Image (cartoon, rainbow, N blue to C red; front, side, top):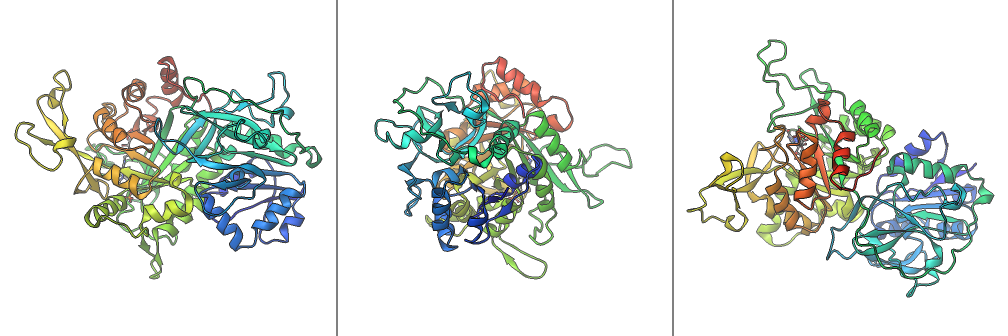
Length: 559
Ligand code: 1PR
């Protein structure tokens, strides 16, 4: 079978390649226009931004051959942007799409929800009954969760776009909006979600399409559809993220470590371990374990990258490559996403560094110190030349690929006398709260270099600034809570969540499954991250999810 994959050169396409390899399929990459004729089936795993996809395809002379391939009747499977390019246009871009489906791609309304739509949601099949076979459903299982990450979508609107809606295979609800989550018609099948990032459910769906004989990829248009009112609540789950802080130990091996308030060295007095970097395992084997255990996302942070972090021979790239071969949920990589210089003097922009991680199999990059400097510059000058790490990566790979990781620390002040610049952001200790907080007030100060240096910027200022610069998600750590097991700092998480419209991940302090219930009940965050309790196997991911479920919080069950 001449299975080909189309890569337009931006975003993580390696994960799809890894999925196909894990399913036992071989494939070729489309390298030039002549390959379209050799392809007997084609997958376009579009990742990133619509404009980038169209302009890269056009500049490589691949846009028209792609259109011709689709019209030729040979099987086509589009993923995310690979689905969106089928439409006539996108609010994200000035260039038109392929115009195969007569309706535009529009932006989600962020009035009632965070945008991007990021996480695990369901797909409701249209015109398919419960007795339908896999063949009828294309392997889309209405009871499974699939991973979505996008700010733009084809809104479900049979009144306005009756012809386009006859392509619809499934719809999904986000907030009070219903959008098209998969289409099929003729030789075309495409999903807005990422099967290659949707764990076992996604792999099963890919396999269903791959094992079908090429001649069987012919789908009748769906019967005319009617408008539907949204349900009171969408099915997007709250995400559980397992995080691995990675650094070289004193022997030079990359290990997963874990600090208490960012100090990762052993406190024992035993001569052989005193002062050594805590070693909690190997990053790739831990990543594989957390994937199997049902983590919704994984995060790998290179925590000593502030020292010197060249791209050449970067050991974290090998870690990401190996992890992406066995992990089929989203992978974030952080640490050292900034302009750097290789040992031979070659300058690397943050965009190049991020690109190397995306090609290795990362879905998002997380920016720490550099984000603080960027917001400081932005606030000082009131403008940006769009060349900074956040802006340049978001422009090419889409904002959903840019996470900002913030490392704030509490600064206590006297609430009666404080009249400083953070007065409006002060959090006041509750009379029935922790003893050390009563009668006090504090603000959250940004730090860089893994908490080693404090900066004249608050966490709220940082969060608002990075949102303006184009970040797609914020990871809120807390130096005060990190490794303490005292629970998430709900005051901090609430403060940040209320300051921005983009998704927020709560981090630091989880010490029990109940702490996840507390953070999801006490704040509106989309995800919660933990490290120590998972590494030390004190609490399992399944146990966390069981407790969340018992508390009525929507979760995804398995890998
Ligand atoms: O500044 O862009 O190079 O990024 C460096 C990254 O490394 C940042 O994301 C920063 O948070 C992280 N980092 C730097 N030093 C440390 C350290 O621990 N010494 N780790 C560090 C940050 C916080 C979380 C941790 C949670 C959950 N660690 O990653 O996993 O606090 O822990 P818990 O559940 O055990 O409480 P740049």
